[in-house]
Image 1 (cartoon, rainbow, N blue to C red):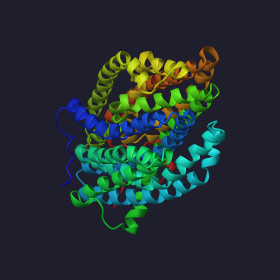
Image 2 (image 1 turned 30 degrees about the vertical axis):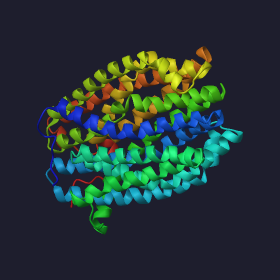
Image 3 (image 1 turned 60 degrees about the horizontal axis):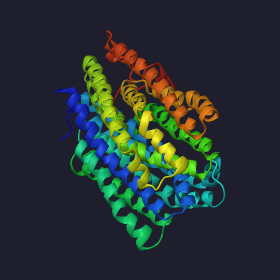
Length: 463
């Protein structure tokens, strides 16, 4: 039964429960990616590890498309539930998933046809480039199923069902973890086996996310033409800027990858390890945007701006606590982590750098995630676009260039971190401003998507 669960109760408790359960699911997938890297490293071929690093940057880009669509679906359903309109929530679930499936098929075809050019843009050459393309050719066709799974999980979180949303990704992670050693080593498929395991995991995530929506929430019905037309504008009004915002991160990562490529495969391998380690270490932080979003969205839909403000502050406090704890653990275990990958030389230096001061600086990207949740659910999705591109392009490109010039490969990671600090602070200030505006007289009933939303048809009438 649909119910707005976040309109009462302790907000820090809601943030904690939603973040931890969401992060367990995310980390199940991230840990499998992490184990993939360990298995690939065990094969003793540097070009394989580098190929996974290049492929990872492109997969990050494609996954960002799904994150944006999931943000739209979750925000719209959460608002409808907060306004106590169960039927509208059900229709928006159906229509958002329908649009997501169509858009993701088109997108995956375009990416698949462009793999050679995308890998080359990242700086991959020779056998490493061929291996990366081969790996991606197997995985990319499964993208529509992953995106449906991500959207389904977002809708489950909008209902407050963090446990089932978590289980979808846990099951996917288990499938991948079981198949990885069997296919990579048992059948001697190496990189091909890792890709096949990932495809199976994506299918499992899709099935586990959609099943409870159908069986428990009745959240999927036959699409209605009139409803599809009605919901296209609100879906696009959130999804379009949210996708743009999410794409900024892999674009920035692609620039970092290309900058690191100039220092050789040892540097790219080190960056790939850091790239896998970051979401494992900070999975709770990565989950915050999707976890805090439904809490803010339901209370916004219910017209309670004070509770929206306290939910945002609870999210920032949660970020600070997690960052301090995780950074201490990373620093204490930096040597064993490097040894796990057999890292030496420059690869080891980069791992040590991440496990030191750079992990503490991740507080600011964490604040950015919470701010983006506020922007997307309070009718200002283009603010997320601005802050994410500010971090991953406007600030990142010059700071990475300067860092590389001053400190070499280590400076690339330092520049990337400083860009996060700068725009995390900017997003913090902007979020407080948006929340204050919505708390002003009449603020909670302002046009749903703010001034930016006029790029699309505004829809005040829900029917």
